[in-house]
Length: 325
Image (cartoon, rainbow, N blue to C red; front, side):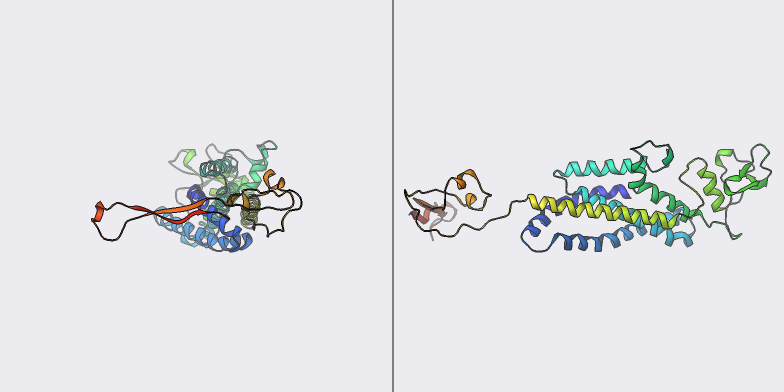
C-alpha cells in the first residue's frame, strides 16, 4: 500500500501550486496549512490501513485478536510514507516527484534488513537502515501478528513434534534460550517446517531473515516511525517556505513625485515593470518616475442590434481611442 503514495505525489503537486498562490496572497500561513493537512492525513492513512487489513485477515484466517496492534503499526507505517509523498510533491516537475518517491520506496525496501542485516551494511549506506521506515515497520508488523499465536496452549499449528536437538532434522530452540529442546515436522521437508507457536515461528524464520525476532520492539519501532514521519513533515514545511520566498511578491506602484530638478526625464513603463523586482531600467530613472501614455486605444467587436441573425457582420467599437496622459 505504501507505493500507492505515488498518487499522493501527483495530487499534492497540483495542490501545491494553489497553496503557494494562496499563502502568498495572505489567505493563511504555511504552518497552519501544514498542521491542517496532518489533521486529515493521519486518520485517512489509518482508514486505508484497516481497509487493507480486514480483507487480508478474512482470507488468510489470521487471528483477529492481533488486528488492533497490527493496525497501529501498519497505519503509522503508511503515515511515514504519506509525509514523504507530500515532501516530493513540491518538486518542480511532477515526474521528478514521482520518480524520487519511487526511489525512496525501493531504497527503504532494500535497506529494510530483510536481505542484508544492518550490521553488514557499510557506512555511509548504513544510515538508510535507520532513517527509512520499511525496516521498523516490518519488524513490528510480524511480531504483532505472530507473537502470541498458541502460547496459551490454544490454537497454534499442528504437525510439529518435539525431538532431541542432537538428532538430524531436529530444529533446536537455542535461539530462544532453550538449547535442550527442539522440534521437527513429520512428513514435511525442512524448508517448510517453522514451528507450531508464534515465538518459535518468528525465531525460526529469523534465523534466515534476521529482521524477524520474538523480542518485543513495538514501542521502539513505533517511535522511529513517528520520528521519521515528523522529519518528513518538517522538511516539507521548510521546503515550502523556501519556495514561497522565491516567489515574486507584487509591489505597490511608487507614490507620485514632484517634478524633477534639472532636465525633465520621462520613462515609459508598462504594468509589468511596476510590479516586477528592481531592474536596471528603474535604477536609471534616478530619484523618481514620470509616466506617459500616448495614443492608447481599446476596441471590441460587437454585432449591431436587429438584422440578419448569424449573417450579421460585427463592427468595431472603441471604448478608449487615442487617449494620452
